[in-house]
Image 1: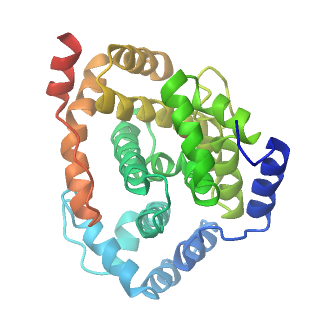
Image 2: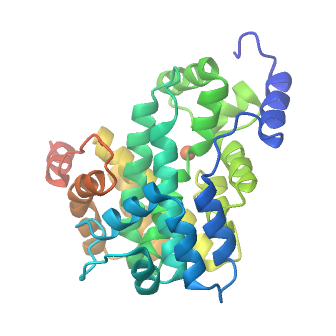
Length: 308
Ligand SMILES: [Fe+2]
């Protein structure tokens, strides 16, 4: 099972590392500051702009991103002050946090598990989530973060115990059991719990904590807050859509279609629009984020291989 690590020891060591913030990835200073400032709905936009400008790299990233075809603003934004005024405090906060997270993922030192692959899948989930968001009355920038972070617990497990994560992934491949059950068996924890701790350590808003904690529980009512409840569902569905584009399995397509209707009372036409737009949006996200992402095949190709 977990080799040299008795489960209880492993569980305690993971908890201790996260609680003591030992070797945790740090939420970048500027993102943290912007989250604090924007907690006050009457925050001074000038202060927010100045806080972003304190990081020249991040400022350049924000401007590049909001002026990219991926973001699709109709007018050019030439300064951070202008970006704050045009986009509003909530959106600029989500952008800064999202871009900081992308940088954090891309800068993780390679560990033995496949970091590159993990980043690709996380960014795919982020792009699909942001595409679905407007159809279910959520902010795309917020859904992007939720999609990006939902499996962050796996990143931590891979960072602390790559050999155990590898055993878990091997067991998943061999048995097809739900990943959280395998993780529980090997570590006494699972990536939703680990990710939730990290999100709490980072003081992330509740909507992200809920999405991270419950994205493997499609049948449950997770929260009384309707926005967070919809966000969990967006992330669950995004996870399935990413899997559909990776595996081209008819069962994934069935799950995706059924969830879309059950979760959101959604029309098939709208789901098709999301699936069709995904590969192109991913390519333009790759550009906007200056992140070399592995492209995915066109939806037409997925459909063809499903029907063959
Ligand atoms: Fe997950």
